[in-house]
Length: 411
Ligand SMILES: Cc1cc2nc3c(=O)[nH]c(=O)nc-3n(C[C@H](O)[C@H](O)[C@H](O)COP(=O)(O)OP(=O)(O)OC[C@H]3O[C@@H](n4cnc5c(N)ncnc54)[C@H](O)[C@@H]3O)c2cc1C
Image (cartoon, rainbow, N blue to C red; front, side):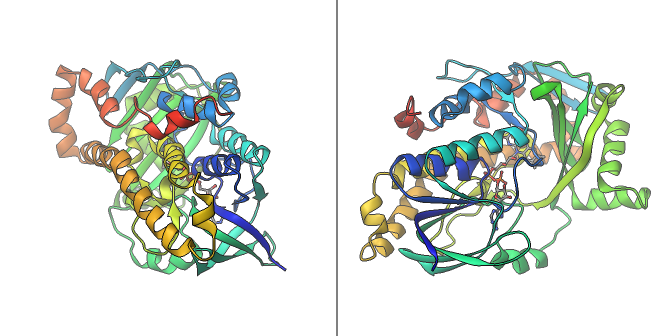
């Protein structure tokens, strides 16, 4: 006999765990399903914008985040070739803590997933969702633990929070066919003893890619970047036999003085990890009766480091739409129509809250990646470094979503 839940949430990244916490608190029975065992390293720049700190408080993990995260990030530097331009980061608009900080995903994600379990969610981990069958009010998910032995759970509503880099099994074939030279592959490594000022967020621009560095928790620095598929292929052809991470690190040290200086006396802690292809964009409107949060709903180019923000904030937007309407959304007689209406309402709000962030991030990414555009932009940024401060504001760094106010002090 299969187990049965009000909502099944696929993926326990920040979006999935935040959704699980909020729905469990609203009295829903929730299954939070995660493919990987935690803690796990994840490709990410690991900066959490200050606009989310109140959300972490509301989710019950703010104090632990404050205790563990790196220093307040008050300045941004743009690094390209031998040059760098430094500017102030804007403080958050309506938060007691005005500055973002970085925390490794091997700490942040378990913190949130543990909080979901403490709020009453059932955690099925490690367990991969293999298939989603049925429809609103009567879904059946097939789950696979490591080593096999598939089993099913029944659920009345499904929230996809599986990110964007690992398609659900049903989507895999479609993604395999559509590889393109402009696809981005993402890389991350951690370093000890890197020479990076603790309050500085260096952003890297190089031919065919962009990236960032930061000092996170335990004085461990993170270097994360995205490289176009065609550039990566060319780099690998120059160094046959070397791992992709090794050729990316060699290229960054060679082409970016800021990285070379920062890593001069540093030691890598753990291997390079990679993921991709990344295809930033909106993934809503699929008409499959599934709610989508975080990267599964839409992904901004990571040059603006707003993915964790959008993951957390979209969970609050979704919980605002569905959290208080459990009866109609889950009742077998009304679930179909009620969930369809709720998906439309949620997706409208999602676009209103986040579409601009995606657009701004895309502009910055294209300028950073293309030498001709970067060459044109550089003298302007040098003359007016405040554009970096404004850019951080335009990309959403200072603002949360209004839905969050409802949950303030709820933990
Ligand atoms: C190079 C780079 C740098 C970045 N830097 C930053 C930054 O500094 N700040 C920032 O805010 N954002 C940053 N981002 C973006 C950020 O990492 C993502 O936007 C964020 O992780 C999205 O969260 P999520 O919860 O939607 O998905 P994810 O964090 O991707 O979590 C999805 C989870 O679902 C699980 N899963 C997948 N498929 C299944 C399945 N079938 N069954 C069960 N579980 C499944 C995965 O194992 C994973 O744990 C960066 C991204 C990149 C690539």
